[in-house]
Amino acid sequence: MVAPPDQAPPDNDVLWARSLHYSHSGSPGLIGVSVGVRQGEILALTGPRGSGKTTLLHCLSGRLRPDQGEVWFNSAPVHTMGAVARERLRRDRFGWIGPEPQLLPELKVWENAALPLLIAGASHRSAKHAACAWLDRLDIGGFARKRPSALNRAESQRVALARALVNEPAVIFADEPTAPLHRTERALLLRTLTTAARSHGITVLLATLDEETAAAADRRLALLDGRTAAAAGALASPAADTPEGQTACSLSA
Image 1 (cartoon, rainbow, N blue to C red):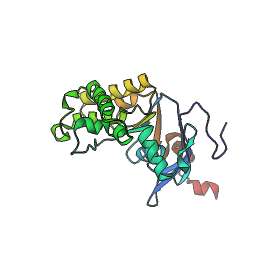
Image 2: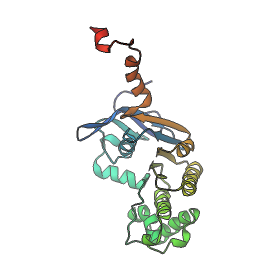
Image 3: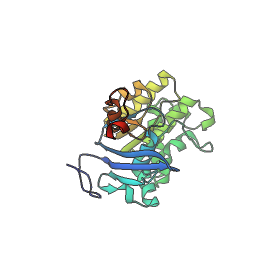
Image 4: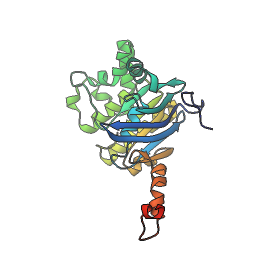
């Protein structure tokens, strides 16, 4: 059953969106995309570059407000929240990891990993303890007191993952997190992310072009040209059924 507009979705979806539309300077990024994700589920968003994966993550996480449509986190309407409320939601309940680590060079490694907790007002001691625990799980605890300049790309990406996990968020948005890594490092990062998600009941939305990365998910949602692949295929099917030598226009004339 479809919920009426602006009515909260069923309780079994921790994150739910309906009929999302978003345009980038007039160019469509999302066209009527709907999705529901349950608590603890790992959902892979697949599709070619430019299909709308990153835009969907940004709308679902509150980084972007959709032009049309609804986004709900539990019973909270993300699409109607103001900028301050959305920022608080991202800080307290969401984690984010992208293809670039985006570490702050002036902070030590453990401080970068602990940043969400420090911003939220956690004590210096408890934030450091939590950050170092995740750094140890990612086999980079020995770098905790160093600066990001001492790390290679794969190590920096592990710090970014520790930062995404440190406050044990309800949802992690992962936008091509393994893209810059070699296969061995990619496997380590993905294994840590999925293991942490399953052991802590964290929902993960994982945008990826990599088949091995997508295979680690519980379910996939394929996007194409800003739509779900199923919707895009339905739009294309009338042309595919047109008899040879005739156009759709000539048939309807």
